[in-house]
Length: 77
Image (cartoon, rainbow, N blue to C red; front, top):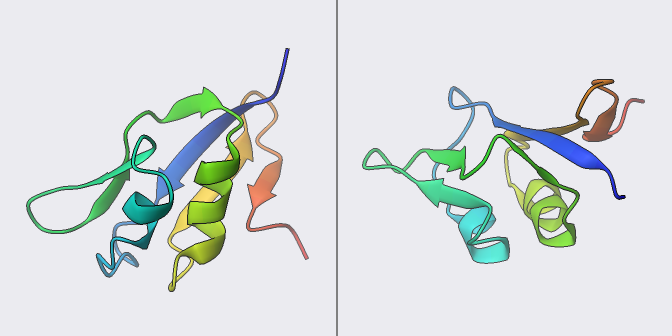
């Protein structure tokens, strides 16, 4: 069984670029205020969701391992 992730978007940082929706349309959606949110807060590990987080121009997306909270993105420095 693969990893499960908790995905969050910091809406105070999100600028509504839509890059996350372009990278992972099944993982993210924009609301009427053009703010991003994950379609599901908990999901299986997914390369497209990771690419969306890495491609966010303001790093508003955080991914952590479900259960442990260990960061997947952004990585701890």
